[in-house]
Image 1 (spheres, one colour):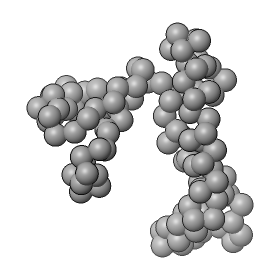
Image 2: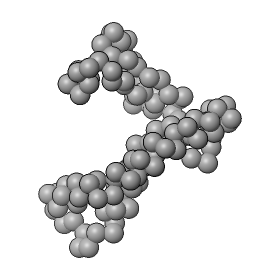
Image 3: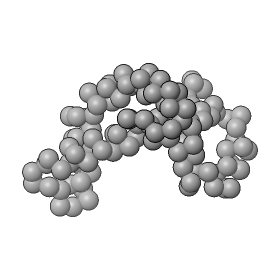
Length: 115
């Protein structure tokens, strides 16, 4: 966290997915709680975790590539190109939808939403 956010303003996002809520992970987070801010999402809340949307955008961009990647290096290059070409607009859209996502999640009291 200190490498990426040397200003001390970084936050760790924890969505409580099963692997993230293991005893080992929970103990580590408790032991290091003073090292960073820990932002807790609702339990396993896909509506608030935009990483799934980012993976989906990368997957669809990769599927449109012709020819498809054939080697691990081709795949890496394809993902990097897709990130640079397609993701800036996608990320901006995701950021702009966050207030609506939060409002929908609050209305649903943490239950499923259209997001």
